[in-house]
Length: 220
Image (tube, rainbow, N blue to C red; front, top):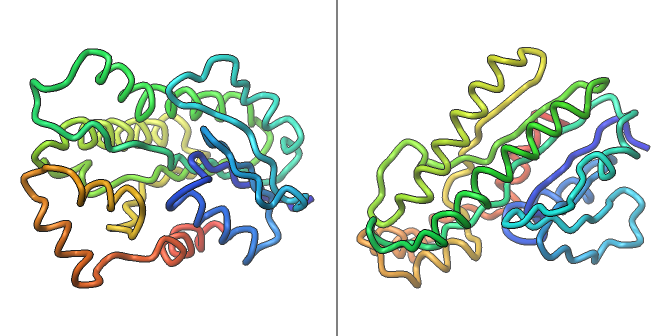
């Protein structure tokens, strides 16, 4: 077993899948995939384990059992990647159910996983990579939920780094990627729609696999 293990949330699509694929193809490290609908196409690969983890309902999900086989690794890297951008709408248009579900997925559940990670993995050198966004620092019309969730996670990680100086914590904005999320944004009715459409039309979207390499390179 490799002395290093990467735990990635949302590893079945988009940037999360790209990071998983990058690690399996370019390194010898162990990978734990946490996804709502995991797709174990690499099920014959002993270097990866798949676990169903629905951030909208953690329910009986037990990070202890997931990490147990890997607690003897010298280094553990948790990548907080999973997120949703929907619903996109003006403030005043959301239902309470929308808000509760949104912040469970984008804030509460990731915080629970990070807290458990720090509590459980006492022996290894720990790293936490929080996939952030320029939206954490900029107000975008109809993006109130996404902007505020990304800002909350960024600040949580900043404070985590203060509380635990031995843990290497990084907030990383990967840029605008050519993913399903961007396609969903371009099909929505938002004030800045032309901006996002223009990025795609002018080939200014970054490939997820390229972003994965850039993000993970310092941790290899």
